[in-house]
Length: 257
Image 1 (tube, helix red, strand yellow):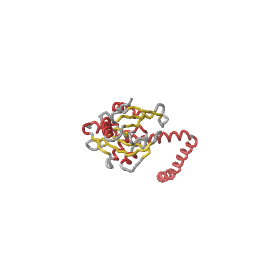
Image 2 (tube, rainbow, N blue to C red):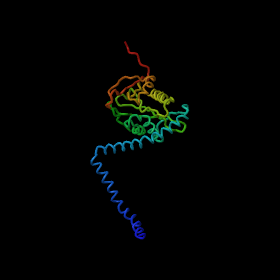
Image 3 (cartoon, rainbow, N blue to C red):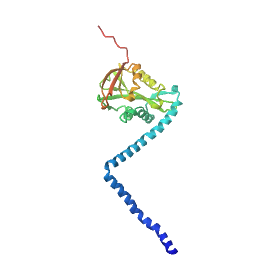
Image 4 (cartoon, rainbow, N blue to C red):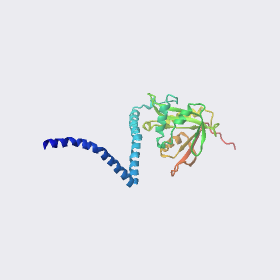
């Protein structure tokens, strides 16, 4: 009896191993059957898991990078901030800073192509929106700290429709971690001074009433960039409008009687 019991006990692992593939097949069959019987619930579950995984892959690294930027911003002395031209060397940092500064644009506001095109003197780029125009002679600048980290961006360009009379302010923003330190004011003042060196009458700005751009509106207003026009935004969001701002760069000539 004991010998037979030992023989049976030794045979059991082989029997279990032989049954394992069939059991696995049963699990897959059950899962497939559940999907067939509950397609909507299955789709919703897969959708929720997929969205969660996408959000985690996109925002967890962003949150970690913002923590590092916040720590660096606390140690920043605003007197150390310099504004220098955009170059091929600082282009990657400028793109990251610009995308960070315009992150509220949900991916629609991406300065990468404009920044890269500005380094090519022959480049022309059609700017989208409800009032498309051709961007000419664009030049961009970056605000950097002592370690040459890009903290913010700004730029000036012309358009074919008003090239003889105006410059346009483009892609001016500050990375969120560095806001509240006067960098935006420094970038705007620099842009205005650069524009005044050119033989044009006006500095103009294409902006909107979106939440992400709302905080900058008082800055533009104080600088003298007044609203001269507005229109419905191309995105179907209630109350969202394009704003067109303008400031004279030369003394306004009095109208003759």
